[in-house]
Length: 568
Image 1 (cartoon, rainbow, N blue to C red):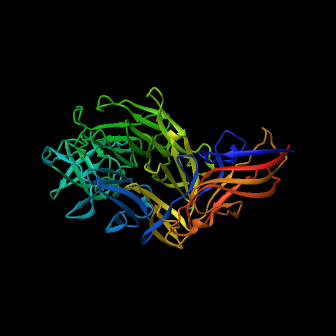
Image 2 (image 1 turned 180 degrees about the vertical axis):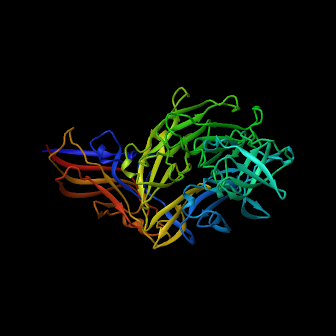
Image 3 (image 1 turned 90 degrees about the horizontal axis):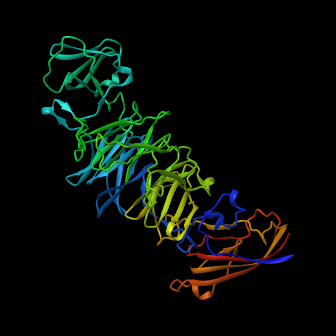
């Protein structure tokens, strides 16, 4: 029989998987729920949730910045969007997207506007006109007096053996093919033919469509085999992903060409005409590897990062020109493809959800600045990744929020300078469904009793939604004594060092604080709270201590010390 004293002064590794319970070098916990890791390594009860507004349905949240001092939160729902500025409602407007469409909707901001892309919908621009926000169609520019539209064109594989004959009937131009080719989905699409752009207006049959030419053309005497189709159209699909990079608008992938990347002319974001390959003209390339590349999303940082379902690519040229596209596949993790989980910029690196949805990866350059690595941010806590459905990073609070399909949330407290990188669970009386960060505030959509609400985290709130308490708790990891696995341990005393606190339960027993702190205007307590406990832990994988509270009071724990006896 021996005595022991164990003190844990840091919880910087947060909740860790049971696979690491025997690792005594970690500053981890067996469970961490509704608590944050503070800069000193201690634990603090998470902020409560302030109710902002009831929503008609579930929603996806997007931050929208019109200017440095004018930001909004968009709640996108089924066919509509609701705008908020701070805690105040601004307006509603109609959208073309269903709730299911929102899973793949991507966006990019530029000078007070936002462009949305979806593989099944024409791109839309959100902007303000006469003080009212609304959506308009994204339109490519035109050249040669309107004869050509500056959209990207290419020859798709299924059109390689197709030639077109232009015929006129009653001043209507028909485009006839030598084989079955056209479908009703070609209506609304464009083709480039005899040096002009044509808009297909009617479907007659698989070999015949009606089209309007944007200019005067000379009808050739023979079928034309040298023609191209617009990359984006109702038949071929629309851009999957979007970003701005080096003053170019960049589209990545489409339904029919998932590995393509199209970049606009410099400073002319509606012009995708590759022209003669001058430095400022448009750029097009396709990702090529031994595996088919499906572009999931684009990220503009120091380099242009292209995240696919198979791996992570980067274009490193500065400046980027048609003749200097240095593209390289750096890692083979793969990004989540079945829904858009927006990559986050954290500590100068790109954070994304992996294709298997079991880990969160951080793309960082190596020490030589040449190659990217994709570090696993949840290597110690992969058990917490339960099918992520949304993600956001609050750089002020240094928290990465990951909403799970089961309605819980995993939160990473990360402060590299202080050695903190630990995960915790957030739960509430209901289900978290969506998240975004705007003006340093973290907004969430919460489902409660089959109703949906926009709420935000606030340190001024000690409960959720005004009247819903939540439990904050932390469990210690199993301990070793004198470097051995003990046969049993008897805990005799537990001491918690508190800071500005008014509540604490130790092993489900209420700790006694000085009586004078409980008046509303009295300062909270800082110091040691001790509790004598007598109990035998027969199962040595159990937590030796538990702290918790569901009181509407502050609680910050700086360290835990346990006293006891053991037998080997």
